[in-house]
Image (tube, rainbow, N blue to C red; front, side, top):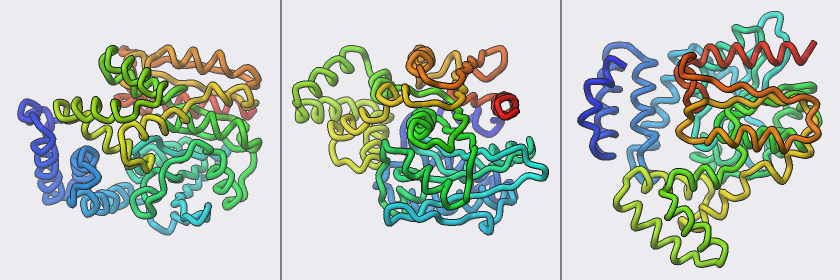
Length: 347
């Protein structure tokens, strides 16, 4: 934070942002601060367009730094066969483990950047299996496999590969949606954590736009006017670099070539069509001031879980420094909440 705060006023464009964080990463690396370097490089790489030639070399560099900084050896990594793909999975074992958590990220995370989370969960006496599925991490970047909504299928492949029964599924960010979808179809998932809740991804994307634009996009999708959507989104993207990046990233993750196709693909990532089939214990987490997922999705998700064995909801507040998306600001708190909840359900 001490390094980032002074440069904030200079971050006026994507190029300045990316170049600034690369410089910060180079400086941290030269000073032997490997984790700081990885975080700076990730801040740059995250906002590089998929077509940027710097993105892939920087990605490989920062992932190696996350491994070095956290001491997690590649010996803990294995590849799980799935539909002709190889899903990378990391297995951390705890002494006197209380059970197994199966964890994955969301729309555009890498498992390696979540290594500090995995280490903390292991310290709390949980075995952890963390994997990347289609549309995530190395499966997307190295195997060009787009994201799928039938998330129970990769979850089933991972449980089979590790011989797991009676597990807790933890999905982060969009993974909160994917975890509910998987729990509805995979009976070995006895407990599921939406970290955070995300009941409707299309609505989340719409919430990032001015209401008039969101209404126009919904109407044009309803009548199949994809050309109008493509032109409208492209005009907005020219004026708003973060929209340009978001559309390009969405097309990349979903394997689509047009904004309208990306938005159509996003509509499949919701839980209302499948929540009634969840019979596990469910923990729904939300930040009171999440910039991404509106708080009402917590209540929408809770109401739709009509067959769940139990439902627990937890809203994190500014007083806890955990009000943001996925509780960035107080990860130790949310990990303790998850650990205590799983332990209570398992007794």
